[in-house]
Length: 146
Image (cartoon, rainbow, N blue to C red; front, side, top):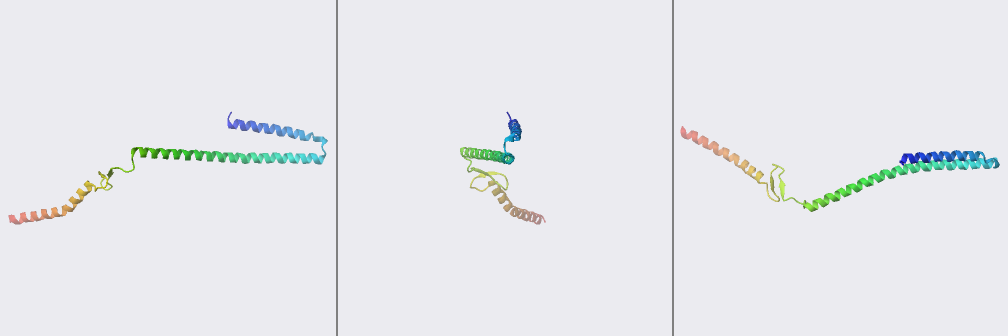
């Protein structure tokens, strides 16, 4: 039986009991009018208080359901984090032995300079000297032919 069906059954039962109670109160002819009025007021107060209590309990139940959902999500996140940690420990991923150079993208050994970047720096450093030597050779070659 679903939750809504059970709630509807409870509501129908309450309605039947209230109707019966109203009939019985109407038959309370043997009571003095003041006593009958007092009895009716007390029953009405109890009915109102019950309605308020059910309404409040419904709000608390909804809040508990929301908190339960949040707790389940938090527990799932904890389990996932623990699993990731276990995998990292098994695979010894604390430190890689090879790194990727951020400048050129080449791989190089941990703790050493990137050989590709070192070569490019040496070539760049040598380039002005090569251009000067080419220029001098060109000038000497031209001057020697004249």
